[in-house]
Image 1 (cartoon, rainbow, N blue to C red):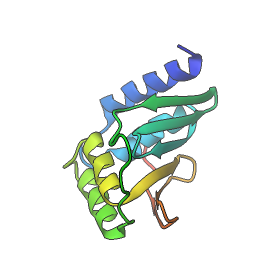
Image 2: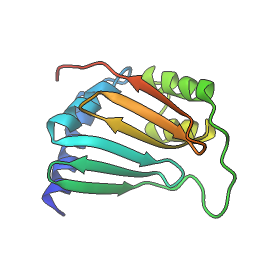
Image 3: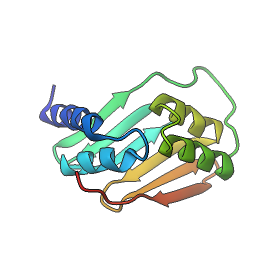
Length: 137
């Protein structure tokens, strides 16, 4: 395993130890930022995350949400915001959140850890950006 992958794995493990169930994403993001991660990019249908780190990029492949040829739902901002609020309230797991994004027509999202923003995009280029709070860990 490369030093980038090892550093990322360690940061994810440390983040899970300090992340509260409700409103926990900023704690995860700050732990990753402090470990040298500048961006996280998720290809939602394939459930593949790309972490851009100071030591190099690292890909993490999750269980794909679909296989073969499938229609993509139109971007639905209200459904996305509902999925975000459920996640922020600690009501969903990460896989459930990703599924909610997919059902809301999100095909990819980008987290800028330095700007503290999350941007979500549909297949037609529609998007929604939300800032998250800075936290001390």
